Image (cartoon, rainbow, N blue to C red; front, side, top):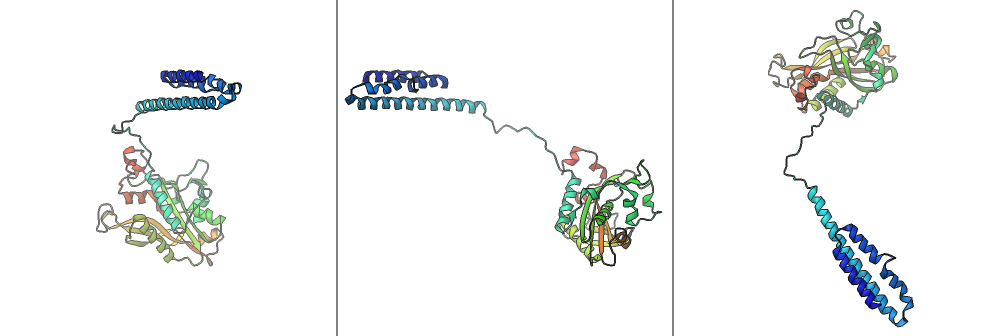
Length: 344
């Protein structure tokens, strides 16, 4: 029996050496190491040989099984290494070759400005208004009447406002101020909100004007709100938006829904106040309108102006973007010119 075991070992070693791939090696492994193999059958027959020979024969069969298994594993590792090297060679990437260009999208400069302004006012305690309070298709009531706009005001003319064919009472909103009225109708002070959105004016399109543009409206109503609070908030916004302190001035103005009203100018970004074509030689650039909420507007939404006061402001997103990035034509925002958009 000892001779038989050694013979099985020699045959196994020869066949392992001859194996040319994983499949043929697996066949050799099954032939010599499976439960049905000749070697395993010899182990089962140990009970039929003399007792004094069993330890020697048993040890020999176990030793031969381990040697065959070790050689199979060694051969498997060899085949695995060969296959791995082939795969690595076939999938090799030359990192010195130039890569292919994959174009990526960019955030539109107007979206970027809206996000930036929104973040600044959120830092100052303002909340973003819900969309349901800021519709673009609006009624005359919310676009004009509740904002204390006189019936004869030129802003109501078809030369300034887009009226719908649905009737004289439906317009494309000409300002985001409709949002502040709806918010005040549906909540009680304190109210501290901002409302970004699109507005529409019947304008002739030029480098400075478009019939569709974007505004951001702000409103703060509470007890003891003063014009000083308005100036403080807007000066801090200007500092954060332009990245450093920049001189401002508040000029008397008139808006139907605020009293007193003021337009806010910032020192010209181009000439630092010296005077240039951008600021028409004045050294100043207008950036927004503002004022204290008119008591008539508060009464129209059932807020007592004897108890509460507030301020409002509105700014054009296109104008602020043009000032910050020195863009000289508003039409560039809407032309979908990739060369322009890639600059942002």
